[in-house]
Image 1 (cartoon, rainbow, N blue to C red):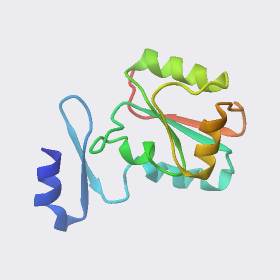
Image 2: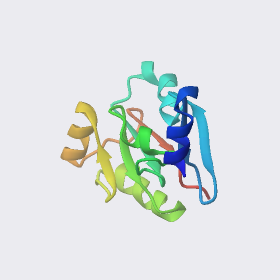
Image 3: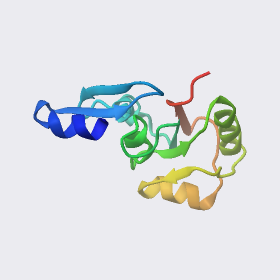
Image 4: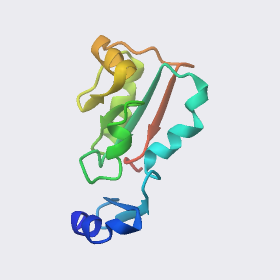
Length: 128
């Protein structure tokens, strides 16, 4: 359905993605979840982790999950989100981690993350 909408209404400059179990999102191109990264761009975080459940192409977490500015984590629900956050804070790389960009790749390859002031995290897809 999302692919059909994207092709049919491409001339409107809108992006379509799967937003939940029974919904889809429509927003201007560039206004996906990566938009939030603009607000922390000057903060000089060593790493930015994103946790979401719709991290596949067409899902509403895909762009930020695959962004060069983030280390993305695919989660299956609230409990999995908590477990993966704990793993990151303990310096482990949880399953479902996608690293892109120079900083993200190095961080995931090292499998050791320093929690604290140098780390930002966001959870988009997992809802309690």
